[in-house]
Image (cartoon, rainbow, N blue to C red; front, top):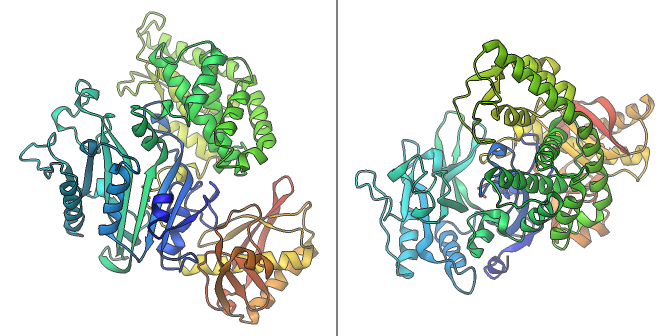
Length: 625
Ligand code: SER
């Protein structure tokens, strides 16, 4: 942060893991996520250069956790230019920060980069290539551009690759996007020479473990239009993301993130509680890593207000906790082992994220409840699963499974020869609370899988984890900033103020989620709203809409915003300079935008539902008609 501060950047604090005003994902998955409004052209109150360290969760790679570099929680370091500097400064600063002895001092010879190779939509990113050449020249290291014909991947330093590798966003059909350049650490040929399936073709981007991506610089310079054209943007942005854990591992000379100070104390605690050593076997190592990763993610999620449940975010959390419990049980760890591990996580991070300490009791309480719940069914479920496997094997009369050599625990072998039915698998899920990846993992030990199509049909029938798929990959997903979402966003401000005027000023916003069709709004209030209260709130909002109030914003210091009584999200962290949106004289709120210009554009506001969201928090679903 200091490096970028010295270069004119203002540092902003991490946002919550739970995204505000964005229903496209369940969790914040990249540093850019909370900054989307500014990438779309809103002015950032702190200016055009920002740097941050953002808490992120990605569960799309959950099956890869246990290898050297994948984590479900990580910190992303980023620097940002909103229409200010571009490729030249961005790349040179990355190089300086990584290689200069004053900063990270990484051996430049170990660094390889990828750039966009060009296609029908956009040309090769020669501008980035030129800047990279300049950097390498300055450091006196050789560079060749990768050329398939020449088969020069061992000597090349710059690798032009297609869209799949070096293009960022948009997740939806339209929006800002552009080429990126990714920076890799080459751990050396010895790391994978024997086992890389690509053999001599191994290069940055290969998943075998030799190349670790540590930084991604995205250059947003196009807008993808609805007729699939790539039109140059007026405001060109830089969005970079650097993986904290991987970078730290590199600096320490480790080939995996679990030996760094961020995770090693958790592994040490697991070793102590289980009486086993991580290095004893491949399976033990994998289980220990999964436990360490999952407990860390769970602690941060609960601290940001997520509780285990069968829906959305809560279900992701539940899956992580349960998978950790199962792996603890494989290591024969004592019941309740997650609690001391959670305390270890709080200890590691409490200085930088003091909210962990503030929320510690709640974090431990939620974990304890989930542990107790799952421990009751885990054993029974495992017995049931074993029965299913046996019946299946006897029926097929194929593999007397006691004698069969089983594939390495957790291996991703494609040749599962046998399946249990989707219905059976669903029973494990429904009755014993087994998350799908846990079922997959258990069955893999018998070289088995389950019938996924049938399982999904059952699941749909039960309409549960409907949106967990959305928690998967967030490849540059700029949130939907359609007119409809903007209107509902403005309506949310009117709603908050109306609730406060009708019900009292104990009311704070606890969360919100807006799609093009509806708005969901959580607020602190101890009891159900009466019909009369709901009507009053609705009327007050509609009154403001009819007045056609102007919507404006002003930038100011956070303390000034507080002085003039601007509302914020309770518990949220803001930078020292903020934007305050006002709607006539009716409402004032700290907010990044975007909003519509006049309330008259909103139509008619209607509350569709009001219900409890969690203890002391109510949830309103509302639409504009
Ligand atoms: N958005 C890009 C990423 O997630 C760069 O920050 O990698």
